[in-house]
Image (tube, rainbow, N blue to C red; front, top):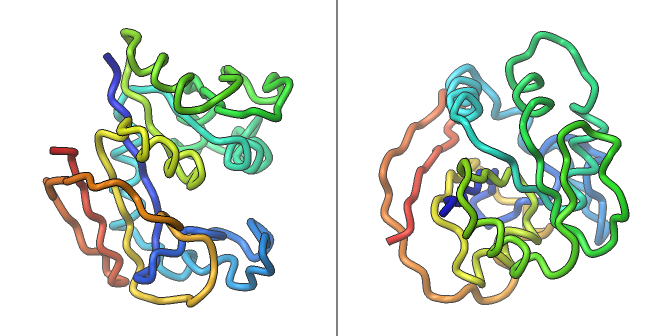
Amino acid sequence: MRSISVTMNVTLDGVVQGLGRADEDTRGGFTHGGWGTRYQDDVMAEEMAAGMRRPGDLLLGRRTWQDFTTAWGGREDGNPITAHLNAATKYVASTTLDDVATWQNSILLRGDAEKTVAGLKAEPGPALSVIGSASLVRSLHAAGLVDHYTLLIHPLTLGAGARLFDAAAPLTEFTLTRSVTTTKGVLIAYYDRR
């Protein structure tokens, strides 16, 4: 059985929308895109690179996969994160995509994400990592499929935007296994499901 780990950047008020660029995700009139870039530093880069060095496959929702395809797919810049993302097997949970051939090593999981991912998790194979993909994470969490969270908690509130858990999440307990504070005040917290 595979484990599922989620890595998510989040504000103090729970916003996960539009971390990297002003135009990344403007749904709902969101105007704070790019809020996370000013908090990047060497500590964060090393922590994220360490996660990328662990073997495993990626599990992405449609929107994140499409965004990553544009940002990372086909790039050859010597960046170890680029190399990891391009080489990894990428499972894409979607009810609307017909094809994922535009980014190498992508496999489409058609239909209900909870069922298709539960089936994938039950198979033998490497761990599955989810980066971003908030809608997918909400569904997987509600189905009890998330084993680990890495939350990068940024020291700001936005007051608007999609949150990690928009509605009530089911009672689920986690244990803090490790934490790191960056030079810019981001708390990187590692949690395992109890």
